[in-house]
Length: 75
Image 1: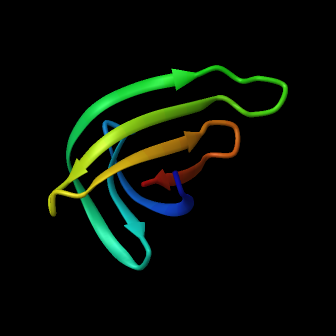
Image 2: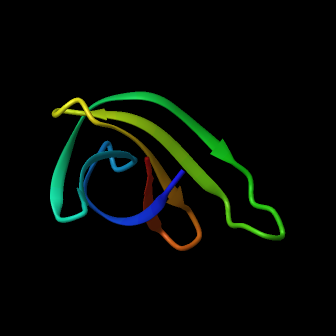
C-alpha cells in the first residue's frame, strides 16, 4: 500500500475524520466502515486507523499518528 500525508480539514465529534485534502482534491467522508487502534512500539508511535468511504465512492484507509498528530492516507 502507498502511504501519503494528507491535510485533515474537519473532524466530526472532535475525533472522526470528516473532510481531508488528498492530492489537491477535497474528499468528504460519507461513511466510516471500520476503526481500530495500534499501540505504540519502540519503532512506531501509537496509531488510529479508519477505513472510510467518501462521497465519490472512493475508499481510503486513514491513519492518525497520535503522538505527532499527523494524518496519512493508504490506498
